[in-house]
Length: 519
Image (cartoon, rainbow, N blue to C red; front, top):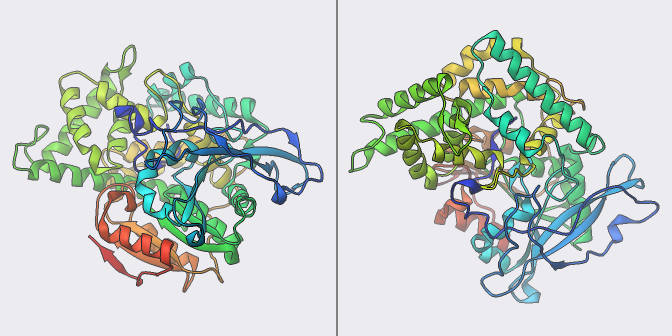
């Protein structure tokens, strides 16, 4: 059961096994070395051809060359394990880059990407989208990384693959005391396994730690300023960086924006509303087409049949990807995953058609992609890292009584996702490390303009968060742009207006007018 659903649009791999087939890995980033008196800002990165990604990064093949024939390069940066003890033990932070394709005298610097999660591997994701950023590459080296606790950067490890299969099959929307007890016991077991297997790294995976890593990265890459492109949770990371290092911010873009003013509960409730809105839009789209919608006659019919399917699966799961069966929890996760991108609505339609006929394979494949499971049954560490980073950041600790008291509000927000997201709040109840704060501080007086893009149809980071982020960054810093679209994020929708605004800012420093609307 994910702590949150803030994965970047496009990371939908288990459905087609194609999206990240060009993904990459870096040299080993395991920790434990002593930093001694070494000045880590003076380290030289040893860039080499990238190997195949590790299991924690999601597996797969080494990245294919870029369209112009250039190769992706990987390296490992040393960073302090504990930023309060910068001369102590170090960990390795895995990096990947594509050097600028343009003239040397036109190069601006490195453009650092974070694709969200928290817990997503930037090393395995960036190559899959390299073509989308070809124009940006004319003036930047494209760079991404596995944040600490993720992928090859001293990954948080909890349960093994077999245990995770069982964990993600559990009933995450309990209906009675026995089911509630089982859910809480399973959550406690997961969290205890994280502590047992990753005790050293758990206190050091807060977003503030990753932001400090990025400033070290800026220096090691040789840049006076950090040029940054953050998606989803990456907008929170970027906001925290701007707060800590406002005068080191270069040009920065936040897409699919997290609301930094919300508590964990408010964020989960906002997601319930966001995913319900996306489901409403999906249903309307299906019945509005010239051909008959195969999963309902009206939008309300589509949604009522989905709700009935989930209730039926709660009582009697159907065959999925054998030997596993499609449970209510897996189906809910699969539906949520398909709403991250309008490109995947067709898979949702097909998956629902199949499920109504007793075949749960496609919805389970969607669910597997949400949980980081590949077609061979191996899990990346995105679920473990997501929980570890979220729980280290958020000081709130909710119990079953808190959830039960809030269930009516969640169910009103979403008949389909309300219970699922309400019960996800217990993920941190027994976490070994105390949370840092009620919400991140992103105030950044003195920073240059940061372009903040909100998508009106975004399920995972609802549109209102962009305005809240722009306001929290401060007057003259947050510049909001609205995209009237569907799915999680805006830039990769390939909308010409959005692309023009982002590229114009990152490449030429042209700040769009605040309040610009793209549709």
